[in-house]
Image (cartoon, rainbow, N blue to C red; front, side, top):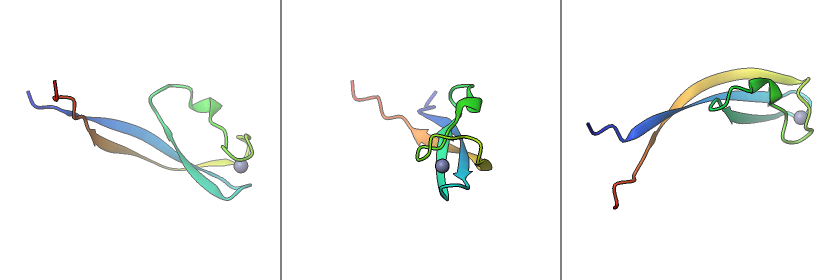
Length: 62
Ligand SMILES: [Zn+2]
C-alpha cells in the first residue's frame, strides 16, 4: 500500500481587533466555536484562507 501520509485541513482566521492571524484545524466540525486566542472573541474574525497540508506518518519503527 505505502500510504503513510494524511492530509490536514485547516482554516486561517484573522482577528481584525488584535491584528493577529491563526490557523484552526478542520478535524472537528465545530468551526462556529472558533475564537481569537488573544481576546477570546469571535465577532471580529475574518476567514482569510484555508488549505490542506500533507503530513508524513512515520510509525513503522516497530
Ligand atoms: Zn482578537
